[in-house]
Image (cartoon, rainbow over all chains, first blue to last red; front, side, top):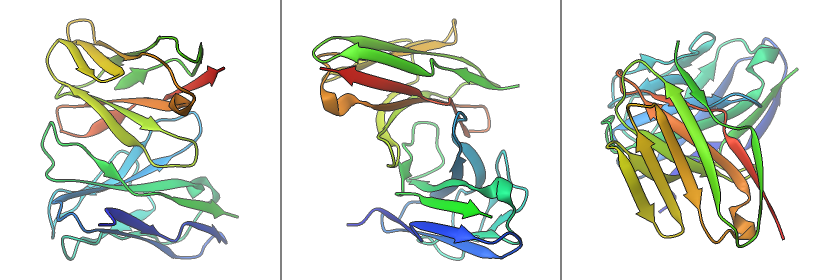
Length: 114
Length: 109
């Protein structure tokens, strides 16, 4: 069982380009999340999905979009990348969005926007 | 606004005990989590507290005081592999996790 996989592992991207970060989980979890992690800051929620077919905005959604066509996949798209989107991006999932549910994280994608 | 405060960095000696504190101010409270994150890796779950008191799990324990907006993670019998960042996160009234910036723990022989 792989858990959560993310692709690519790392990427260098020219500003203005479009980019999709992929996230797949095989745990049949209902809830999925995208975070960004920057030095000196806590993980910040970009978008989330409580169940397939629904999505919601987190703390820092501007410049990002997501879709949740099925249970397993939750891609994150940067429509037109800017240097401030340089970060480490983590996808996570939990069995449900409930209060005590533990979130499990993928290995991350390191993105550099030049 | 919502705020989670943790020390930026701590140093401890192998075999010793260390306490990492976390204070929080959030809109609502639905539980507090501690995660461990080794450099270049993903966060992994350590503990969950929703009621006041101490939760013990092997060498790691976590304490919560909701009235004080305070938690700590206690690590006993420190090992070199415990060198990592420790992240405190609170689930708020919208059931979203609000994360602290993390405490980098350095273990010295």
